[in-house]
Length: 419
Image 1 (cartoon, rainbow, N blue to C red):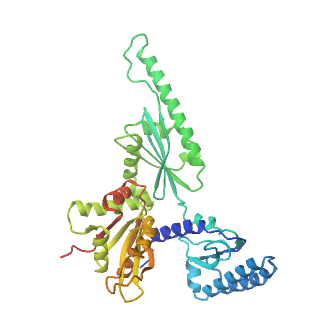
Image 2: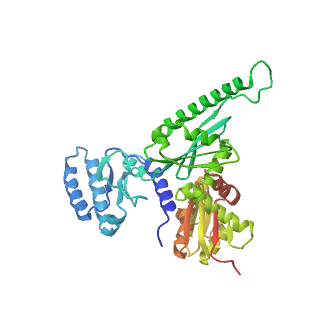
Image 3: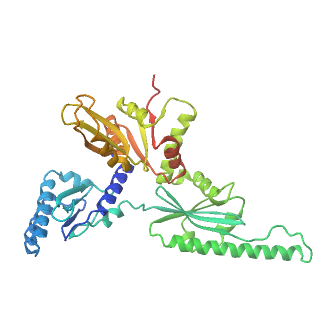
């Protein structure tokens, strides 16, 4: 079964947050980027040279830590297959991380398979890890412009990955129907048309400025009620480079933000590979099973875990807002173990509470946490065993927000209706 891209991206994002907090006392933290197709033997030879070069470091402590980190990386590379590098590339971070002040450093290593292959070769020692090249693999590359327009208002948006960004809201100030006397109807209509023209010019200038600054801009979709959108797009209100990338014009019943979301629905078939649309369809599929009571929708940790263990879940939906840990508790005096889920912020208090609790099996006071992992990863491991597709859903979208708020961020679409 192929890896879940959304899960891998989520894991990479989380570990980047962790690595950004780690600092060394000297230039003791090594960042090693191995591009796709690079021979492991070449990397190993290079590390041998760097080990020798490290003898020139003035600080004996820094020298020792750098050389120790290189040895740890070399040992890890021996466990890596060349086929993995050929297919995915590899990034390794290693270094002496202080635990509780000076003199408490320990060598830590973080091998990471990037969510997208990297093409740079880099070795650097610094007081912090070099993370930007890895962050760039998480950046959504394809972007689509969205403009919804009528004569009274317009909204300019950008669809990038799972994010719908609203860049500008504009109002026209165009007068309504003319009821007072003193002006001929024709003259008044000319005034209105001039105001509309000036409004369209403003929209075009904002849209051109926004979209021309985006390097991976794929195209523009325009929507709105009536014929206003057609009038706007047929003339040269937007820069010709943007106009050449108009991919579609669609009718919407509304303008404003509601019209923007309606436009996305209208053009789904043309942007089906955009993550925003993928996530929307996944959550709506779950909601459809729930609404029609097909028996193929389940939610909540206990229920979903149960169906995962049975191998009944086809698609596992997990909110990226989940801040829950799965902890394993063990007794140091007997074979008693227990697994619980707790919020990340409650871990310290929970550990303290174990100090005064007795083992229910042998009454000893030797209970301790022996394993901690994010609930997302725990459920994903169960899913992998069962051949279940895992999708991590952004809590920032409308559907993702509903998954998080209404279903606590855990839901599943079953393969069959349980008997």
